[in-house]
Image 1 (cartoon, rainbow, N blue to C red):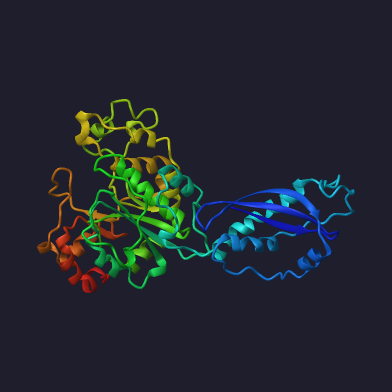
Image 2: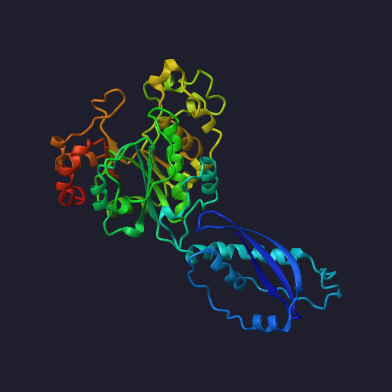
Length: 432
């Protein structure tokens, strides 16, 4: 998209800045421009320019309506004498004037534009209006890379809830109750495997919140790419998304939204809450699952980490994941047929990347509680309705460190919805 912005000097000449908006979502355009000298103004045009009202900008629904206000932020150039006369078909620059002057003025104005855009442009639109559907992975990631790596200090931070699922969201009613009365503090994004057959359409807060999706398979790089799509869509959709919580269809909240929100946004270090472990059993087998030397030289065994697939990332780390290519070229490689039992790239890529890039910016632990005491075929314990009690919720919240509490838990069978709803108000969302 392009727009011409005209500046007039005291002698009636005009300078036109052609400003191009390279889409970064409606909230954050990237401004590029070229500058040219146009022509002399007619008397009518001069009178029209003098009648322009220099009023402060007010909120606009889209960037094209905002652009006419941009000249108010940039002082118009002035020249000291009349330019040499030329034919009307070929206007020339004054011999002493360089386009660098006007370019410099425009460049100096960009920080002001960058600062004001978040306050002038609407903060978010429903994802269905983002035209992301049909966008391939490469274009989606490119758009996400252009999103701001940090949130504006003028905005109320939000939490992006990223639902990675291949079935119905059986606990949607419980999540709806969790989100109730906090509309402006969160966003929902859903990656649904295209092969999934939903028993009933999603409604309420979950309606029309799907991101472009592709098939996923457990213990394959497809779960990493699905997570990247969720992160990219959330980065593009709303610049106020500060934290990105990855959950599955079998995850449930075990605290109120207010407790979850304050636990995250009050963290002064703005950390990511992701499990990062080393020295675990069978770690070597997982490291060589693609071949003994395949991960080298990018990732040595000493750098190889493991952790829960479910995490809460700070925005700067979500941005890092989207930009990263070097490690991804290794983790996307298929595992050897004889090593499929050791192939869980979704449990290694994110912990390894963040451990290598910013270990001090990560908690080292997950906020999602999982019960591995009676694991079966690599799956954690599945809670059933008879197990749902107030005592279970208290136990799931508990950690080995009194400085924090688990915020989510998994895995719950779909039949657990009714008993969970029965204790939602008095237990789950009662933070005692």
